[in-house]
Image (tube, rainbow, N blue to C red; front, side, top):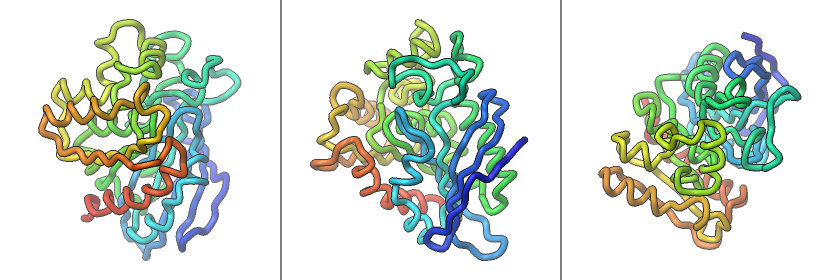
Length: 280
């Protein structure tokens, strides 16, 4: 498996790196970032995954997230993959909410998307194996996951499908139910076809209704988010968790929008929350 270091920078005593590898899953080169906090010798550190939203790459949170101080304080590795495959030969769509930058963390089954758009397998299988191989300080027995918007949808669904892998799950302004919003209906029908039963593994509310269980979830949502009512619908997640007995902490943050000004304000708190649950 090829692996190339694109850049490294010292930050808060640790190293922020950006890396590239040839993915067998997506059939493309993939770029991701990893922050490794300061540590001693052969110490093993827990891993927090961050999944980004529509139109984003690894760079958005890496440059704007303001997570490194908290990761250094709590000794947490921070991994930020891309949101979709990219390249001249990768199919795309004119809309910002489908195609490149909009992989929705699914394994597409419809042509022409199925050859490359396999972000579920990339996040659940290939990239974790690469992290384990290239970062020996990463304790893959201690992992948690978070994400924003489309990435919040990814964090919730991947976390709910893999409760034995992730000790904790959080999200920022997640797409709570892709089956019930325009973004999700466009993406899931395009990638997976018209049968809505095939969409259910990619909808947090549907997964919970179908029996997926975790102990708790943490969600931050700005009440000035212009996507709140039409696309995000946290009330659906609140109802699903209430019906299932899942302890959801839904924090409606007054005056905050959908941007990284919002995410960077609370990402350090999420790192600390996950770190408490990632203790050996």
